[in-house]
Length: 128
Image (cartoon, rainbow, N blue to C red; front, side):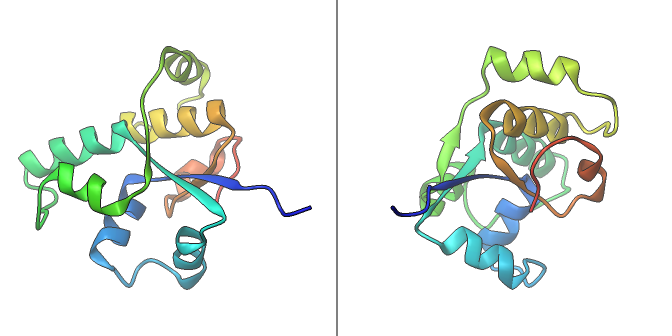
């Protein structure tokens, strides 16, 4: 019997690092994302975060947000009421609303969360 597919949700900065080929992305993470056995998800919350941060000048993109999502070929995770209900139960370890919804989504969907954010390690969830 083959090993079951692992499902991962990328934090926004991991998604952006992947798109730009940033050297901050460690080799283990690159291999995890490239592995065809794994299902890689990016949240609609990341698109929202990128849009806001681009408008206020915190990040720049070489292309459109739509192109970023299309070219990545990752699966897109919509925000559901269940995600918001889980968000409502989270302790305030992190004040960033985007990180908080991503944590709630990872917990609700039983995904492993791929992040470089140490604050997120305070939450009860699987992290890479």
